[in-house]
Length: 94
Image 1: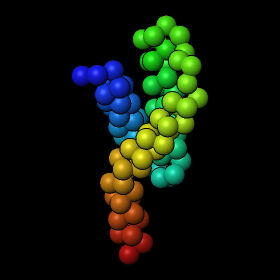
Image 2: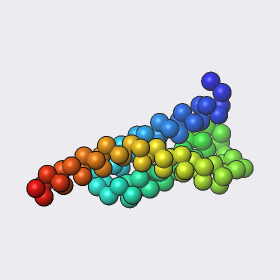
Image 3: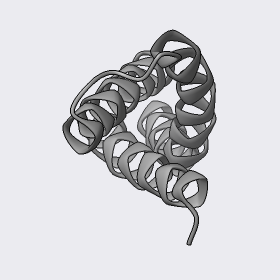
């Protein structure tokens, strides 16, 4: 596996795990999604720092692109939680 594919798989793994935790603990969809995306990107940059021993020259670009990817993953992971909470709220109201 190439270095780029390895990095992407690490970012996706971190994003899925943080998305699950954030959506499980935080009821508001947008807050959980943005929190998971921010945490995922920071955790990925820290892991890249430990692997390389220094921050890469394009850390800011990687942070922005990683945030977009992590936000998309967190939103997809959070959809079942949001739908479940919406059904729960509708059944409580009825």
